[in-house]
Length: 154
Length: 74
Image 1 (cartoon, rainbow over the protein chains, first blue to last red):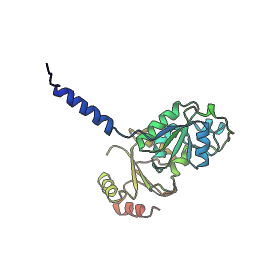
Image 2: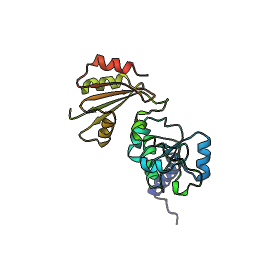
Image 3: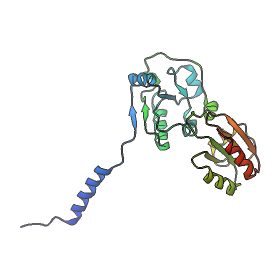
């Protein structure tokens, strides 16, 4: 006896194929190790340390810029979102949040040193806390001019 | 000021980024405000591409003055 395939099954199969064929492109985040960080540094990638200023000054990856996590959103929104950015923190927890934040802002090439600075085997640079205040004001040369308005209840 | 700011935001779309913070509700806005040493609302801070402050205006500001400050941005 021949059984007709229920239409519902056909629809599910088609939807399934469509889902896999047209699913959104994967995010542009790549997990990197120490070698990856070293390569990124050589390539001139922006390296961002999202720890606090104090932690940063205590020792950081040479060439890294300090943007504490709580200020990343406003600072990074001024950066070129198509340029690669590498983020790290102490152990990978805060940088994971930073990755989500950057993805939300539309960054397309994010490198995540997810083991954090505890896994860093290269030399460390001390001091030079670039700090949040100047970094908020320090837009990249490619950024658009910005007008801030601070207001309260219209 | 809202209608003026809304109008200017449309006019300068793609040329200047507008970031508006209600300091009653935005912690980030409060932080930024203190970093710019702004004490009153409304305050407008105009930042060039290199991050330098081009102008800061406090209180009700005319549309013409706002435009002047926006046009001066590099």
